[in-house]
Length: 98
Length: 417
Image: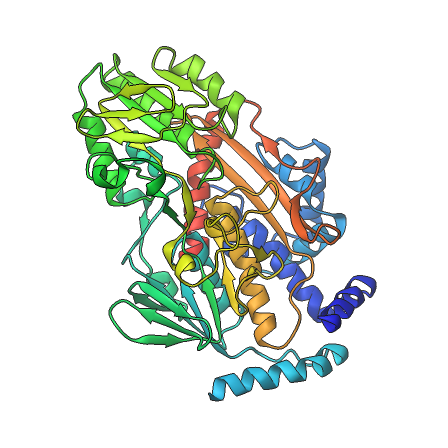
């Protein structure tokens, strides 16, 4: 218990290791997969995210957040993620094969 | 025993591997998943996808998956049962061992799941995604009436039977839908169902009525949007009565009783109060009100039994978290990621994120949604909705009708393909 508390403190205080960041990105991207397909490979009717260049996704999500991009639901969901989280998940999708 | 020893070893080694943050050791061992719905199937798939070293066995009593979300469209006559069914072949291709059987007991001390057809399944970690079962005892006469008075709150044979009752009902008949006190599975589900049945009546038997007897004071989800749709599309067809808890049913007289009234109907669709599925009760996983299973939202591990994780509608929902298929799919991924880390002797993600998007069809084509994003809050020790994020549709619309169906195709693939 005490160890895990210390660990938690350490993980919050220190920059994430490359390894942990990979997994954080993977888990964040998995929150999008419910609608946009596993690893962003949509089976249809929703925009595919796999292979989308990182800068493009960050820009689109920021436009959603600002209300500058037409949306039905994404303007509401995009506001729930931090800048760092958007950076991580966009990096993950950019690295996926289309 | 060998597997246990490995886990012990991995646990002991965790301190060193974490501090050094060295080689990511692959997890090994067996995870048994009970239930092949939105939670269980998603967890099974993501475990295999993210950590092929883990042996995953999923126990499911039905041989195919039938979706609760979209099943109201079958009642409205706008989709068929075929449309909302999928096989478990995709999970098998991913190396999940799908066991078509029912888990009847869990020996959490010996770490074994007992199966109805005989045979025990040992596990290193267990994921229980049992859905809900009904507290039928809270409605007098319900148990004896179950052949005639349906809930259809689990998609399957009752969905088909209720559709048949609606088809057989005479023009000018009354369909009564009784809604239990929240929390129950799928908060907007009853109001979508009322809309679907009203849509069918409007076109097929326009003198008929839909009467909603709601134990809650008001519509519990997307209230203004549903009421607007009812006023615009189903005026004179849908009647809503709040604070109308059904306490008894009489299938002989085809009537239901509230504390104040006896109401007759031609089709009685009574959804009883709910709790975590039977297997969660049997295994001692219930922690609150004899109904729900409290979990650590970073891992979905039970607060009652170590090494056992609980997903979905059976959980004691975190603040602002609906009991929905979408939410359960998100929980399953947090759980899968955590189980992999824990089985490798590492700590789970300290800050999980989940989302929910829930579409409701108010007609055959028009849809309304509610959405939210949930982030871990260290101060409160739970996962809570992000303020300023989420929301509902500005108005019902056909574009979201297309997205709703696409949502279904994508989530079914995300859990099963």
